[in-house]
Image (cartoon, rainbow, N blue to C red; front, side):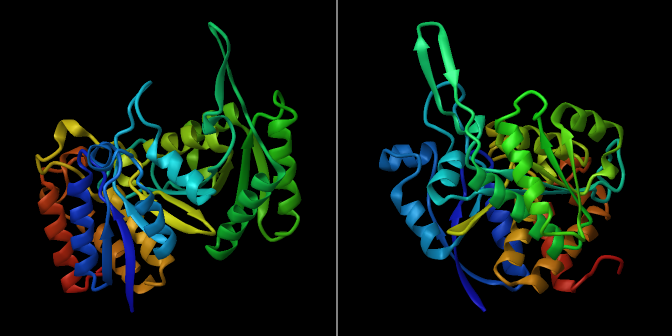
Length: 341
């Protein structure tokens, strides 16, 4: 089975980790033709637009994209490429599986949490204006349509992946109308899934509970801004943004991405960790029907991380380089190793 997939290497360390992941997927024997495009500052210098129309056309045509990190200017400059992609393609569901990995030392063990974040509205949409000089208003928009479909996405994910519980996260005790609507939609959808436990947590209590005992949670369902913050918090429980996957999914397609920054300070130095983008690529392989290859890559990740430090990059306690990790992954795939071998 062959596939055509849009490839957005990004900037900073993006091209390095993307090249690594492309090589590993090739070692896994998956036949992919990559349509490569520039986004961000490189696209501005070439085309005058950080997100050229050709990129959106490619994703709409192929239905799948793999995206490396892209620098977003702070306070000034162009708008976030991630936000523009999500809006333009209506990628309403952000999926962030967070799981403990071998030889990555953290304060917690056996963490296995799925974060599902609504991607299209809420304060994170950046609907802001200046009322009068010195007074700025930001609009928090919550709709029944978006809240219902993200709740159904979370319960469907739980059902198809054998998850036991979905927890809605909100601040409905204070924002009784907006967060109240989000919570009511969650409760309505929960009635359709009687075999899955449904509960809810106020956002501040959730953050405390995650620090106390993250193992009590299974699938977390959050509005856009809460989800942006909590997904990074949960990633910190297993080693940081450099080790977790990210996906943005909608009816028009899906973009699988590294959720960490572009780390321009180490770009081009063979120090970057490809693991986050590789984990995202595993999700992508499942999404395009390459489940067997996805499992082989996941098993090889576990095998490589469980081996010596020379095969892991320095950010996760190793002594190796990007090239070392890539070579180790390809060697594990060539040998056909599986977790536990």
